Image 1 (tube, rainbow, N blue to C red):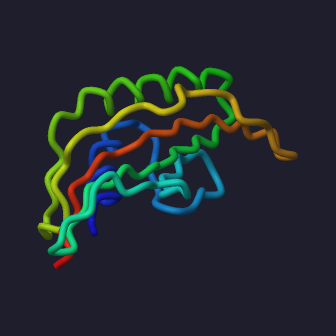
Image 2 (cartoon, helix red, strand yellow; image 1 turned 180 degrees about the vertical axis):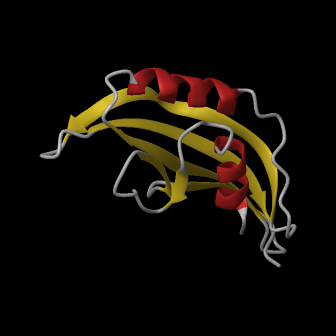
Length: 126
């Protein structure tokens, strides 16, 4: 399923590098899937409607990282369609689960901000 790649394409409009599953040594936003997804409906052919959580974590030295994450949240809320390039899913919607928030600071004085979203997808078995 290529949903995370399509989600990254939307987020790439930000002025900060978006990296799937890892943070860079410098300022960047990590995009990753999270535990806790659930199946809403399962069909006899194996297709399913699922709600899947994804997380954006922004690593920055900027005290205004919450503004960047708020811009990202606003951008994501406006997404009406996010088609698959390999027909592995149909996009049904996206919601903000947790508004952007400060998550902490590390020993190198990087600040971390989080945003959690949930995608509703019709996933095709193959």
